[in-house]
Length: 476
Image 1 (tube, rainbow, N blue to C red):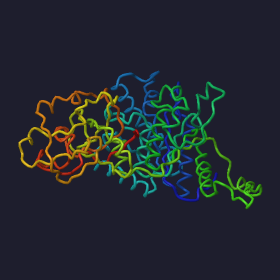
Image 2: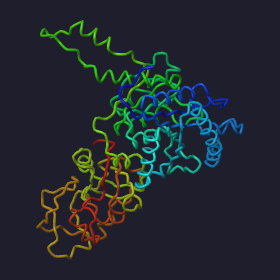
Image 3: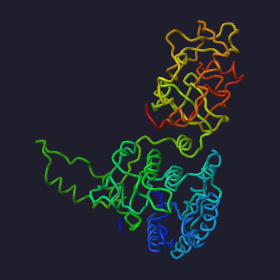
Image 4: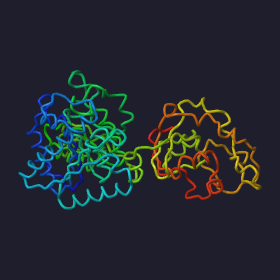
């Protein structure tokens, strides 16, 4: 067992297929014991460890002697309630043999959708880890409904690793990495060792055939989890649950890679010295089988990560192409001005999460949407700020300085009968998420306008931006 030189915060996720047998539903005690020994050994080296454990429904199936998962939501929730107590008792018994205290943490997306409750959960994790306790996290399936479910524990583990600013997320599964095709069926399947971009790797791998009958995930959910975690600065590893002790050698291997120069030094001739190559290879430990998803060098801030991955969006904001382009730049700060808004879908309150969407086809945008407009309620007001000739609504950045020329008036009927108002979620593509600064009715009033209109239209202006803390997932 290698010794990891620097203390780390590590999240280990164990799937249902690694906890209970797929057919008999018996707990896989050898795997669970190996995980416990690994976690305790990590703790002895000074590392902080969080375990994300699936398996409540699988354990419930065994307790009730049922052959398969029920299809109804209430049936699954009942089995989760039966199985969760037995599952945590099993973990407590195994960890108790090595005198390692644990804590049960049950979460739903709804539990951390509120910013205050989210921070409370973060503080609870920090306190437990500082006490030397191993938190064991699972989704609270007993009360979860589709709107507040993480969907699978891969996503839950990624959100957890983001919450506690983990160094590593280990997704332990029944395969030892990401492959170009299903290694169980294709003898030519090749393991992908390192992934720097989840988006670009999707076209090179097959994810539809992996996963067990008991689990809710598969390789696709692991790619989603890797995308969330690496975006928050967490290195993510897919490896086999059959030998959890490989966690030590995997971390040591990547630590050695960081400390060893990537390119051996070259003599004046420009040729690589064979002696140097030999020395470098001697320093590098052998590579255990796994797939490493490298952490983003520019991770999302905590608030953006929270907005993007833990909140269930209450509605959608349709933006123009210029706004999409600007928001994709890091220097935009993730803030959207009203001038970049084309329309609103759904009803939501200020402070709620919203989808940032664009229309599916640019040619569907009516020509008059690119023209300046003024709300009917302001048509008769003197000295109204107007848009200069060079101004276009194709950009989300607008000057807040008073403008001098007049705007061609549009009637209230013309303004309020735009086809954009009739769009639904099926007509748009989600490109990101953010937090609404105003409610849906208020944003509808100020959409497409310079921010200087907000106080006149709404009677107040909490912010010049209609949506903030935006994370763009899909670039232009």
